[in-house]
Length: 253
Length: 253
DNA sequence: CGCCGGGTTGATTAACGTCAAGAGGCGTGG
DNA sequence: CCACGCCTCTTGACGTTAATCAACCCGGCG
Image (cartoon, rainbow over all chains, first blue to last red):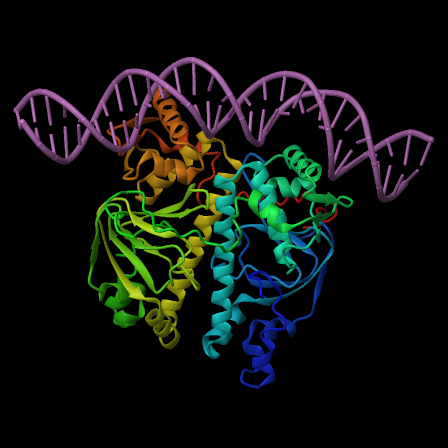
């Protein structure tokens, strides 16, 4: 089904296989030419405010993306897992720090080179970059809605469902989801406290919607039920009912 | 100076004036060739979920950008004012509905044409598009932090300061800011209720930080004080202190 | 075995939402 | 031009949610 967050391998191979595009004109091609670097847990890949000199593809492991506010609060902006690409839409400095949650293997390419190749090559790479930017934008706006409109329970349900979708798990079946990050990471991501996250986890467990297997694994018993709780704010299920707030344009339809 | 939200006129003229770039290879050039359309208050410019066929430049007036959740809640994602450009980073369907708050004049160009010109022209337009996308991303991430981490008072202070910056007003002086949108729009934008927004406005007024001139104008007496309240979360003032959470990587550098 | 850090649970408090009533603009119609 | 009514905004009383404060648990490691 090709979820918007999934690994780049597979679906794009046909192009290269047919010889229509030399491999350096796709994102995957550019990345695969780079050596893999490794980071230990807690190590930063880049810092907020640094010049965004590189674009990163996580091969394996999990990164947390965050900013520190002047008073010390930490806002986690997102997490990046194996197979995902990071920081495509940066034109100025990095907007957040990226730090390894687990040991991480990743590849990076220089943004300068990527731009050059995009400018001189046929449209494939440009298209891929635009797609990635749109994904990043979609994710950001999804988070805006979660943080602005949803209750604690809805936020956690959303987080769990999103994590499940990201692995490509099929709905309706129980799925085991790895959550390598700490409760504090989750709390800072969802705009809650660690205690509230715990309590919601416990509540969902009592209600039989999830089971906790150790600290870093959750089994979702039926994504559908969780989706209800999540306010059905599934990543991409627009509720574009054409009902403007003001009466002027509302009468037809 | 060139605040990230400012009107495109002025600073980019030199290029065209020197004849270095034909006018159709800049965003301003493309837009200025289009006729201005007008929308009445409450009228939608485009709808969430529609194919994002056009990029829009608001000439005059104010748009609100929002999504409706399945249960009817409304999340306002942002506002667009005269001189600003809208929807550059859409590669799939529009992620929100854009609706006129006031009477609006705007120009639009087809995305298809914009992409074509960007692909065939020199780098100027491509650069401008990337800049706009980065701006949109910065704005989204700023909102994520406001919604995820800040208190009601901090959110409102932030909103007021951001509105002031957007007009290009210089700090330290009292500034009159136009807020054409309703209290409900502000509430849905800040993830608060209308009553809470009112109460914070009243509190700031009691404290002498602002004065309310009618429903749609606020006078900020000293942006500096408001910035304190705002958690000093100024649009771009990264607090990139290199203090990782884990000790492992902290020692070098 | 005991310590330590992260996680969980409980009691209390503070912040914000909800419900309800009243005030103030603004357009319309007399 | 004024009066009325409507809609938005404002303010107050009360309820709910999530934060805070605090204790305890549990698994990993020295």
